[in-house]
Length: 183
Image (cartoon, helix red, strand yellow):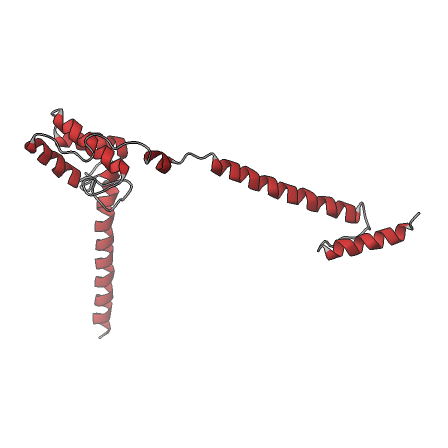
C-alpha cells in the first residue's frame, strides 16, 4: 500500500504541470479544484454546442429567395406605354430594401423584382401611383420612399437639421462677436 503523503505530493506535481494550482489543505483541495475545472470545461463545451445549434437552425431568407422564379412583371414591361411610364416614374422614387442605394427600377435584387411586379400589377389594375406608393410605405415603412413625407413619426428628421444649423450659426455669431469686442 502506498503512503498517503506520497500520493498527495505526486498529485500536486501532476496538477501543477497541467497549470492547476491547488493544495490538499482545507476541504478537498486538489480534488475539488480538479472537479471545478472539469465542470467549467463541460459548461463551456455545452454553451458552444447550444450556440452552434441555435445558429444552425436560424432561417436563411437570402438562400430561400434564390430558389424562387422571378415575379412575372419583374423584368417585363406593361403593354400600355402610358401605364408603363407611370410605373417607371414611381419605381424611380422607391428605394430597394436590399441595395439601399438604388431604386427598385435599377436594382437586380429579388425583392426589387417583386416590388416592380407589385407596382406594375397595381398600375395595370388602374390604381393611382400615389396609392401604390402609400401601400408600399404601409408595408415596408417610410424608408422605402426617396421622397419622405412629414408625418408624426418623421417630423424630427426635418426639424433637427434646421435646429442644428441655427445652433451652429448662433455659436459662430457669438464667437465672432467676442473676437470683435476684444479688438
